[in-house]
Image 1 (tube, rainbow, N blue to C red):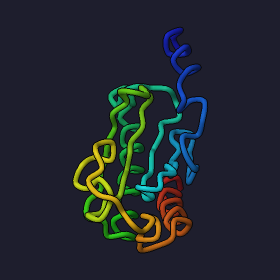
Image 2 (cartoon, rainbow, N blue to C red):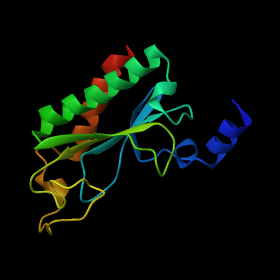
Image 3 (cartoon, rainbow, N blue to C red):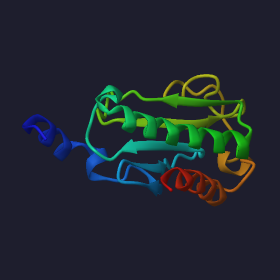
Amino acid sequence: MTGAALSASNACPLCLEAGGLVVAQTPLWRVVRVVDANFPAFYRLIWQAHVAEFSQLSEAEAQACMAAVTAIERVLLSALSPTKINLATLGNVVPHLHWHVIARFDWDSHFPNPIWGAALRETSEPAELRLAVPLAELDARVAAALHKLAV
């Protein structure tokens, strides 16, 4: 690791902390659920090594990363029937490779705006209670799907 990369990883919050509630992990990546009351079905795949860009992965690593992102998306679609799945990898604030996989619903506070945009409505009922399955079950389904990739 170069001096700049080592310095970046020492200050990187995704190198220092889990980044959410850990649902599954391998030597290459970890998947966490972001604890957000407005967006309860919000998962993040975080690359274990400190890299900033997807193109820095080898071909095999990139395939493993996208297989995991796709597995999360498929579970969210199957379990929740959301209006849309949002996938994002920005890294402008935290330049450590991570993918956001977020189930979105036409009833959520921001839809169709991005979750980082302006809220469009107040919601009277907690978002978690509107999900088709409890979060513990959703986490278990995501973990099971990801476990299949690791075997």
